[in-house]
Image 1: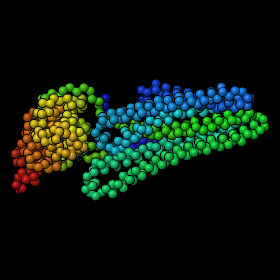
Image 2: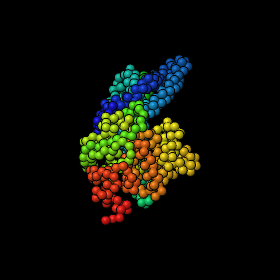
Image 3: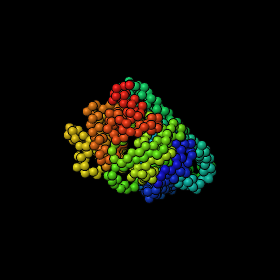
Image 4: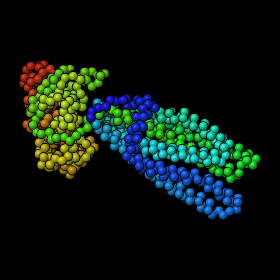
Length: 592
Ligand SMILES: Nc1ncnc2c1ncn2[C@@H]1O[C@H](COP(=O)(O)OP(=O)(O)OP(=O)(O)O)[C@@H](O)[C@H]1O
């Protein structure tokens, strides 16, 4: 399955749009729990029924009192209704809350699964902090949609209708007074609800933005400190937090308007019913017990109306969250990986045939008609000035992006026709910054090939000159190399990354050499490692130091997105001005 088209870019859907799609996503999350939902809903309804019975039971107590009958029966029935109603209500609440957690879990799982399969080009456009907030914060809003939102609303509606029916049964005139008030509340709620959804989206966006700002600071923590920029960054994060607060206040303002209006209306209704009812009792048109029961129903009405308003508000915030979640779910993703056959051990050859590429329609062209061939086995180097498009060659080979024109083949087969997982299993990739993941050295080494035998690990450790490191670390391979590998030097980090890639037994190793200067010992080691690896697989290395590649089988010189020359070190020194200049500036030649 390949990409689905993006409906809209994250960050900018029209509020209120695509409600149907949001609902269908929401129901997708709740589908596995429909039995629980029904059970929780039924328990809530039973509890509401017990609540509805209470004013009638209270009336029977008053009537029994007035008629000097025994109070035991009615009081017992009232007590039973209270206790059972409360117990069943609490159970229903627990069942629904449990389900809410389940829904949040499903949403998070689905979102993380989607995120991992997003295309690199999509992730480039997103802010990691915002992405994080969608998984952690937006999903929590889904919890309340079904519990406080839908189920409470349905049982409140049930209570409301039940109370109205009972009120009609008691006194039609008083009911009309009550309904007039309810219509006013309903109109107001209908007016404010869409605003609440829009305000909720903005509030969640503000939280996302704050995450993004925080992430930026933490990513460059040392630079922030070294630049003495703490105060400025505190202010930037503070401004984002303030924005989140203001947006949150806007939501609170709207919800409290709705809430207070509902409350005031109920009080008004109460006073009106008391006045009109009192007059009717005085005129002998109504019994006192009926007025008491009516007032109790009115009193009961306040809670469901409040819950209904609260429920609608929860649904609006939930829908706002679903919209932000959907933006990620709708982004183009890579095909899902099936079982990957072992890549084999035969070195692979690569060809670029008239490749044209740019990172986006509005971006400059990075590759103009790039063509070169890398035969299977041995070492090929890519050299050229910064920005020439060397790392982009690797990004295209890994299919992080797709070229707009031309063809790239591995083993003579267009990489677009390779199953993605198979291609990536055949190609080992060592990034320029060679990240070390939080965990032990062993976890880092086995990251790409968890099941590898111990002897293979030892072989690769020897090949990558890491035996000394493993022996030196206090707990050997089990030593935590820490967040971002702070315990390892630049050279060690790079060799760990090479070992990680090699343990997957790639048929082609892409090595983006780090730009940071390695010391002479580490540089020599790296050169030895590359030469040795090139004996068992094809190595394509981006070299920022020509000293690394003087012994390469062939060197491809790139400049401004074009291949300008191909040859060995000696051939290029003779035949290519740019290469000669690069060699001269790197002290491999006396400057001419
Ligand atoms: N993810 C990206 N999105 C947009 N533009 C990019 C991206 N990566 C690289 N570029 C642009 O593409 C051009 C080529 O970059 P590339 O990294 O391929 O060059 P390079 O030759 O490897 O440079 P260096 O030696 O400095 O690593 C540069 O102008 C760069 O700004």
